[in-house]
Image 1 (tube, one colour):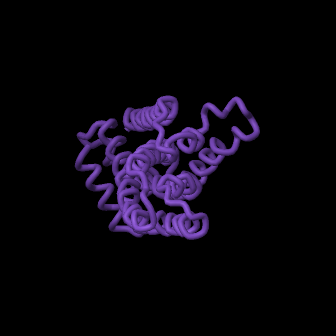
Image 2: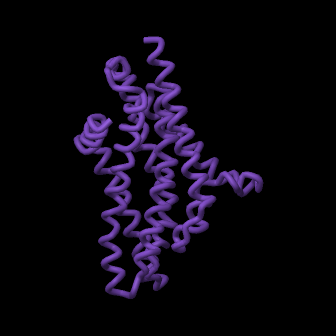
Length: 227
């Protein structure tokens, strides 16, 4: 698994994708930072991540679209599936590689935490809880994006499918109240940015992540069995 993680992380930063993701993530964060600090006078670190849920809904599908679709398109999928590595190692390796790119972006936001300390007294516990919750949300997004990528060799189709489903999970609860329980964005925004850890949110985000990691493994195992 570690070899796959290293290979995937390296591939992210040997191509523009990794830099584009981190760059756009920080650029959008900078905009929200400016609005919150200079326009609204807020020094709450969690507020910026509350707003960032919008951009990651579109950014993470770009990060995950290549995970398996590219392997299939270039013909390396067969080599990957017939290698000594297990389906579990392959899936988790690719999942954690994408998550590492997100974590790098999150860690870099602590530059802004230092700036907030100049303007006020931001709560470190709230900041850490926010980052924890945001990581859970990103993990859920990555898991679904990875699953979508395993279904097709077309990266654009994988990206569109992931974006559409994530947007549906976000907006459908506004029209179907019974779906509020399954809203990933609401699970994050309802507690973590305020510095509160919600067990229900952890269960929802964690279960969603595990479900689509397992479904991805099932897709790969089926492909491997017919090789």
